[in-house]
Length: 268
Ligand SMILES: NC(=O)c1ccc[n+]([C@@H]2O[C@H](COP(=O)([O-])OP(=O)(O)OC[C@H]3O[C@@H](n4cnc5c(N)ncnc54)[C@H](O)[C@@H]3O)[C@@H](O)[C@H]2O)c1
Image (cartoon, rainbow, N blue to C red):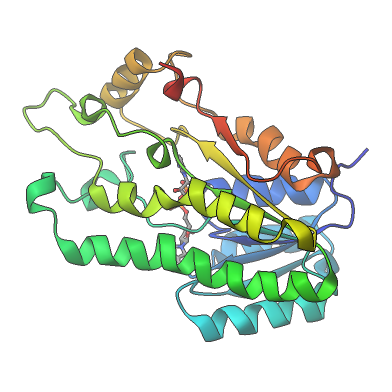
């Protein structure tokens, strides 16, 4: 039986690594999904058109820092689906240490880290998340219910162990402060929204993934294995269960929770 039959979902950052995996899974579970992103991946759109009914998804080009685009996007989604049952706040800027992302990482230590990069991440990961949530809550209040899922990170909860980013080539890399600063707010924002709207039948939880495998270098995988209780990165399919639980009616008594999906990373 499909666990999300008929539910309407706005998913931000839908064409990224986690977005593609979970949006597709949500649709396989019977949900109707709005794929929202600042950058549309037209190959994925073409694939969707051949695998799903056009009534069951919509593609929305949306910069989450742009209030007008967000408001217009939500209006378009409600016109298409009739409701907005679930918002997944997933879009974020994140320095990636996989083979393709490494070259874009700023190597600066904390004391020299450029503040313009900090401001950009805060604008997207923090302010953008609030902008989308405000707009979704207005719709959810009108319809009398809603469900919000925020995507956090282990670095919302603990500091990075910078040894993970030392690949033994004489250059120490760092997980930068812009990500830590802008994602640390997610757990408490989740509790803020959960309690603010508890009487309005809107619930809000966070999911905390860590280290999704995506073509990482051997040196990174070796470092990761040493620091992880499960001794490995996550496969993207391993996120399906937790994301589905929070979106489904099997979690109706969950609100304000922060669900760790980190292979035990934060357990020691
Ligand atoms: N990949 C991991 O290992 C990992 C681990 C922990 C947490 N996370 C979290 O998961 C979420 C998704 O990460 P991912 O790995 O899929 O990242 P990703 O970079 O693959 O995808 C992020 C998506 O967000 C979009 N985006 C960026 N700025 C935007 C904006 N202003 N408006 C709209 N969309 C925008 C990008 O275009 C991209 O498609 C993030 O919140 C990240 O912090 C990821």
